[in-house]
Length: 267
Ligand SMILES: Nc1ncnc2c1ncn2[C@@H]1O[C@H](COP(=O)(O)OP(=O)(O)OP(=O)(O)O)[C@@H](O)[C@H]1O
Ligand SMILES: [Mg+2]
Image 1: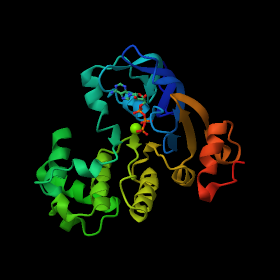
Image 2: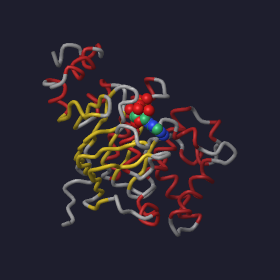
Image 3: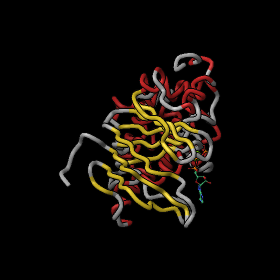
Image 4: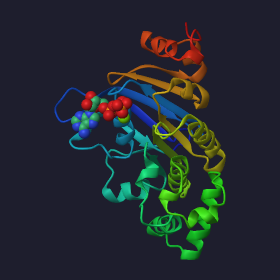
């Protein structure tokens, strides 16, 4: 297939199964352009995390793609070897989990673990890795990066730890950032700050973002496109304004009606 940068990610009619059960995700399609932000919304169990994991070849247990295709930068990932995945994961595509900040090692300073993480992926000196780490902490707007480098995770707030996690996820300038409810464990003020920073990422690294949220108001605020899932099926998708003003499915209308700030928008 001809290489195209029109889309960073394409999912074409993808069905995902766990074992021999009915597919958890059915005939899902999505197109994501560089620098754009798409949101996956839908109730618990609708298949959101399954979709993100399928993109990185990280489906747990007996999860597998039954049909369809997933293309990263125009190239199908279906035949990827472990070596292919190693080159993609953590570098051109990174994932931020709900508790990315909690994955930091509690007994190592931020500076030590950040530089070790960089040196595990790239052949750089300690000095260079330290500079890069500090630069990344600055980019996610952490105050006094040098001080943070010398701190242990417990000395930072939850929001600061999450920002460290995001800074690490961005260190290799990924083309695609996958985020599974990256802010829902945080208080509302911190959530807003992190969301604003993620929106700025486009200018930091040109990354496209595919993010899961339960929060339709958040999706309305920060997305270009919204995908609404229910029971493993895509019931609505389109531009943010299209979804907010002209939702097709009753389910999307219900979701919109449940958000006070958006109530009536889609009615
Ligand atoms: N490891 C697994 N083994 C078997 N079934 C699974 C596994 N992970 C998820 N599923 C099933 O796949 C479906 C989709 O789950 P998924 O975790 O993708 O939903 P979700 O939309 O991310 O939900 P939530 O909002 O609660 O995180 C569910 O029916 C779930 O039971
Ligand atoms: Mg999930």
